[in-house]
Length: 297
Image (tube, rainbow, N blue to C red):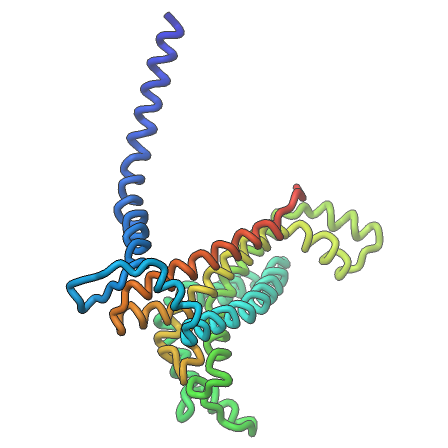
């Protein structure tokens, strides 16, 4: 009798679980999985938004991408952006987290100030930085002129335009990454530092032998999300330079946008999107394996 009662209870629990899962699954299927599947099919077609007909293209779109100089350049710009942003943003954010972790009067004020850029939308931040970088009346050039340095055209010079966008993105994201590092630092037991101090370890040795190894999981999370965010950067580029000057800031996402919605070539844009998706997936898997750790605390 008891067994029958438990079996009925298990069935009831299973039904309740399905009732909770099914609505979420339907939403995912309608808004995520089906559009992805449809986009995958479109990537194998000659599909143009201004044409009523489409035709099967097989792997032609993918093959064409490998010889497309514009796609290759946008891929390089995306990786260059990521290779600069990843180490600089991680180092700056970790430095800020170490500073605001210390307990002193007014530390809450500094934590708030460093976090404020995170709550500013990318669109607003990009518009403000576009004004700051302006050659004629931008605040940055006023400062440069004031200290006797030459005026620079930050967003119209192909040599430095990407650096201007990199500075904007690091400024906006460093507060968010700082909070993640702060959570990781607060989880490290203070007793480890005290034991190292008793053993005569200096601050640098404590940082490299205790802090960094025990921050490995936090570092993995930061590196992976920063890499993905950097590779798919679009809004600051669209607002500040629109991919210019001379395509020097056109990243892969910008290339996909231009191909899909300006050239109306949805098949080719979908193929570029899926190729880029697999590249990012491979990079993320490699990063997960590199940062895999058994360290517990």
